[in-house]
Length: 68
Length: 372
Ligand SMILES: [Zn+2]
Image (cartoon, rainbow over all chains, first blue to last red; front, side):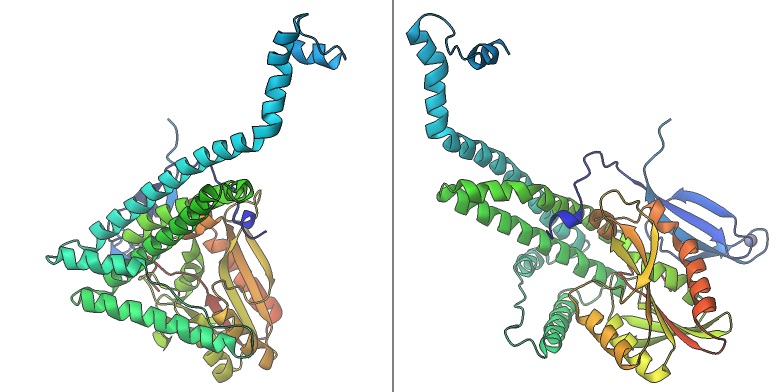
């Protein structure tokens, strides 16, 4: 019983691209870019151009690249 | 079709020549009756030998990758590789549970000494490493060790089945192989993620609570575990999670136990990743009751014990994901559940507590790649 609870193998698993979402803590405008080494969730990057608040990495996740 | 039709018609003759009939129908039938199982055993053995070979390839690759990762920029490569191979064979002996009273304490002791030993040996081996890299090495070695273990178990059953020509043993192994390969695949993907310090699916709990902890002062409370005080809707909120961004689950059991006894809260909310059932959507959020925490059971026991003694209700919020998703790179669906869970936390606190009450919120999971 305990083995099948893990689920079934996914045969068509796609390769994920890692993205980093940067967001200004005040104006909340998200910018999506590819992951760079050293990126960490909630890491403070530089200042926002518009309001001079901190820009923070809000999310890092993998997403299957969209078909063109 | 024609053949079956002719046989099924009750007329078991294909031609009028009895020798050809014997050769086509009765001889193969007799052979299959007598040697059918042998044939099947042979087929299964063949199939399994391919899978075991593939598993060995994957295991060797994980070892190579581990070596590449830990010897990065190190001169004394040979000594390090020798030590790594001994790490791969490390084992843990579980305490005897014939007399189960107190077995949790023994288990706790064994697991803690195991972690401490691993940490100190890595520190000895690489004295100049920063905490993040040292932790990454620890995790990668642990994954390679699991890989080694899965491979050895599969190989064991394969060889025993083959040597004793045991059809049933081989058939059982063939039945569970897809699940073991699933695990191997998960370990493979985990390795890649842990090497780069990217968040895994299991990090969603620490990520949700970690976001609430930003800009609040963090205090150490147990090994690799921190807490911070905050305010949600006029309630004093105590936020607990493992200390990131290194890959660790911390000791939520000890931390929560201490905080419950010290603060006497009126609600405990636990947030964790949970294994989804096939057909359920990844990233789905579900609410429930009880201590949402996995692992070997030590932390769960401590939290349940403290909650029961203090008559403290425990609310659980889980984010559904598969085994592979839980230990490899966090997917978009999981990451985007953060706001949903924050809304649920606010709602629970407003509905279930009164202003000036105290609430403990625990983000359970491996906090790799997540800063608080
Ligand atoms: Zn801004």
